[in-house]
Amino acid sequence: MVKNENMPNFDEIEDWKQFQSLVEAYFNELKNDPNNKIYQIEVIKSGVGGDGGRDILLTMNLDDEISTYSRKWVVQCKFNDKDLNLGNLDKINIPSLVHSLGADGYLLICRKYFTNNVQTFFANLNDNCKFKYRYELWDKDNFIDKLIDKDKILIHYFPKFYKYTKSKKLFTNNDNWR
Image (tube, rainbow, N blue to C red):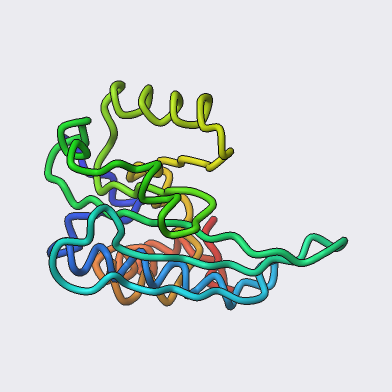
């Protein structure tokens, strides 16, 4: 596999704990983004040990110019070395987990990619959920796209990439991605 030095590389992330910390840092950083409609975010980690499919419980309070409302997400972080398949999820009853936590949806963030079976499974969950919960997948490309303009995160979690981008002047004077 050819590495693209123009993009952050999850090989800089040491283990699942650091990957989960990265996900947590991303959501906490959203509080500082003036372009979003989120005015409050609460990020609660599940702790150490078996989490039953929940690494983070995320509550966002949003303002859509008409009213304010709250959304709660169950977030699962997968730091697998290979693409994620359904066997990696077979011990989790995802709809029951979402329901039991009073959440609005489930977000699965993966270090690599998802197999077609996982994508089909999540599409079926979205199409057939009578409670209208949302089931979302972020693979490494989706997540990197969200991280690319978060300098604090890049400096902390991707120091080699950040140093490379500075040396190649891939950032503008305002430190925004070009």
